[in-house]
Image 1 (cartoon, helix red, strand yellow):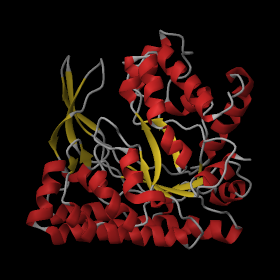
Image 2 (tube, helix red, strand yellow; image 1 turned 120 degrees about the horizontal axis):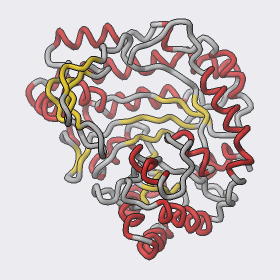
Image 3 (cartoon, helix red, strand yellow; image 1 turned 120 degrees about the vertical axis):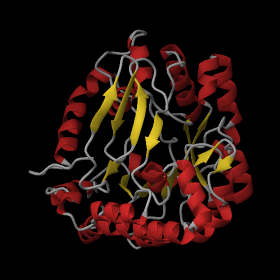
Image 4 (tube, helix red, strand yellow; image 1 turned 180 degrees about the vertical axis):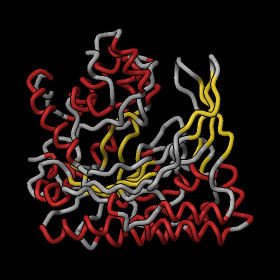
Length: 396
């Protein structure tokens, strides 16, 4: 059974030889700490880490949905401890220098007025040729024989606006000017589809099956969503439906959405919009995969749900947490993995123990030694470098 067959069959509650071996990744500080505990120093980012540990991969059809042009990244001021800068999204923020990463202090957001929104729309022209790699035909041809699941990213309808406007500002705008919020969400839905359309059409013409769509929001915290679920269902859900209806025309009925925190109140609106895989199901954030399955049955699919704090606590806690998820594994439609990026508090020893126990529990075979797969890594990196071959560059 190929990785692609395994992934699709599992999410349709069909028998598989074993559950796909997926993980979410690690913070940069985690890999730095693990280098002192035995991880090879060349494993210094999430892509290399995924390959080193032998996790299942997805082959992505590339589409650039970023701001073109992006805002100029510039440093405004800095001292020994802090730097104030403008990022590629136009957000002015202050960040700590050195040490463990933390959430920056946001000073000013670029989206404050309708005039600002017109500037953002100028940067979101879906017809800009830089959105599609010049070697897209080569990529589509390669996807025809992919043994991994084939996916495409379809952006964000609310989280992007939150990034550009700020959490509190957007939350208040849903009350003060809900029509403008709906206008922005509507534009983003059209923009996302239009960006992907040339690639979807090429895939359809070439007979490439699209297996999964990914989306992102991060609009919840440990007390629930940042906006009323009623508002969300009325304004955002129909736009998700517009996106998922489009990909269903090319045979894709799986869409996962990345949102941290307690997503419980948004599972229903997401399902109604065709988003059916909840990810990463952050346990200490308030999300509960068993509660989701009990409420929505096989309508909801699940990725994540392993409490990262158990990996900090040690081996007994790791085993107990895996046991907690056993009923969901037996029920199907669930890929268990750590419920966010692994923090540096998790020792390398504990992480390796977690992987051994998870693989033994799910019947996942151990991957070949890393040294035997280095040539495969080199070829993968060469392919990735070609996936956005252009003579012009894009600031993001």
